[in-house]
Length: 201
Length: 201
Image (cartoon, rainbow over all chains, first blue to last red; front, side, top):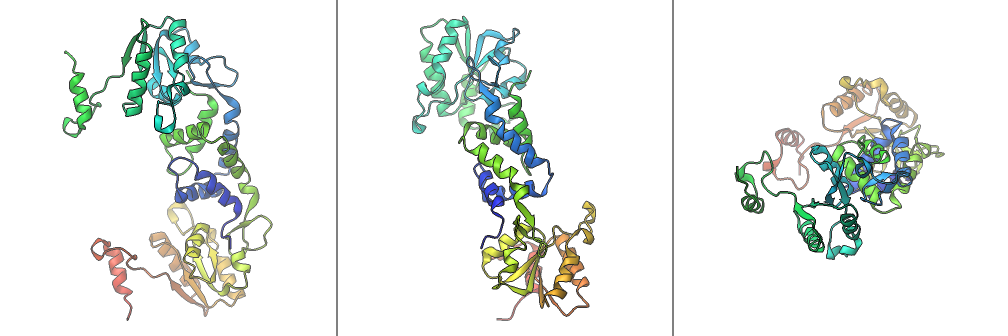
């Protein structure tokens, strides 16, 4: 016998597709939506249905833009330095870098990282477009801001090799001790990177 | 400057309303929905919008039913014993009890627990309807299946007092050691309850 109404099962199943959401959490979300604020289902539902119709990818930087915009405002803004490009894997990485308030260049979203296991090669990423931008905008510096993992490192290496013939300076985000972390708690790889990258005072 | 499209901010904000979902998790969900399976936004959105229009409360047991059903199938089913009622706080508690496959009586959902701090008194719960059912269905046993916390215990006590004049037997789920938990790891309150409720072999 069906214990709960099928509309609720549908919702539990749909929530269960979200990353890291198991059956218990999905039940909790569904029941919360059912009992809670009566505006919430409509709000979530309309935000979801307008998602694909209102979001587009910037043809230049591959950042997320509003449908109808030509290019990302982070690229078109005259105060941003088009000669410096921070290369990131995913659009959300831009948010993290923007929060620092330190970076005044432009971005380039790869749309992933090279990962042979998942069948993602360089040609699936927006690397060709990056190299085109280097030529088009007379770019002087490429900052490789990919993650420190194996895929991030090999993607960075690949891009570096592709740009070897060009004049552009290729840099990478510094690896070292995170601010606030004690020396004794740092992992060995981070610590050896911090040693290798030691700076003169 | 807005870094992400506003449709994405709307979705992140909407996900952030779910219980236990902070800004980072909401971002993760939103980005997953944007990038992942293109069916998911539509599926979630339609499940959400049909939620309130397709779910109703059973007027007898206050369990969740399909819109259009008269009473819960867990009540109308002739194989269920209407003379035994398990009293639970929320509709999902029925799912947990049904999964045991041991209970063949009917349910009564209180719709919460007595909690003066949250302004929930006995009159906000479906206690009056429970007492009506006891009279209507010649109920012989009420099993109080509320949680073991302060609110669950005081709600159980209140219902017990309300039913003192009637003939109905009022029982409570056994408290004791959970199956699979070692004696040394059991908390003191559970252990003293297990001692008090010890059974002859």
